[in-house]
Length: 302
Image (cartoon, rainbow, N blue to C red):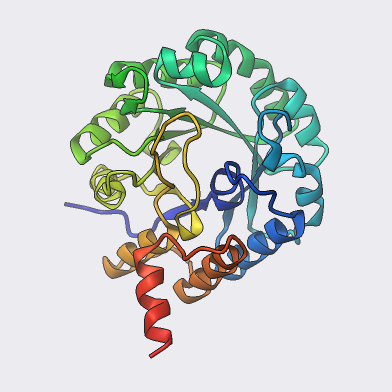
């Protein structure tokens, strides 16, 4: 079995990791997290989201955060933009990449963004066109790709449908997301294979939550298909507000520890990454939700 020799990781902690925190996290703390992720060698960081502050108050400081980060050559800074209003605001902050989200479940789409899957794609079409016209890279994501809190198991055919629609409107890269963390390796492989009917292997990534402790197994299953790009969240921050009990994204520290142990390059300094996770966890007054970070932090105290 030929595994990738190198993996690219997008750390989504500043956006996906923090968006559901109840207490406001100041812009300077978010900027400090981005800084520390860069210091650890991350080249892809999902910084913030240009959404209505009424719906996601934690992201109300999106423009301030984007203005405050220290941009470095070779690092790609991405932002979530759900509609044209969000894109126009985001464009002022000069992102390298925008992200649009479509669901593989009709019920989830209606509860999450108040429209059908087809309507959501229609809404994204002008956003994608405007971004590409300005030379901004467009990444899409298929949420609840293996399981939905309202519909239960999601068929691979649903993932293929969203992948086809995303491709048709010009989305350049597609992430396959187990948003509520119910996936298991074979189910995740089937979802990825469905997306691969419309996207090349180099334009596909995995995004796995760890609700049932399956995220690392699912990452390995994706690696076995040759998938070499993944989203993860420093300190395992994040969750899904529409899925009761769904825990955070897989911790970047755990993914990096596993990959390095397999001889797969990431370009990330694990010790400095753990420092970044400890920084944000200390601010949130909790311990990092990462087994690797916990073990290494304990070892440091010996």
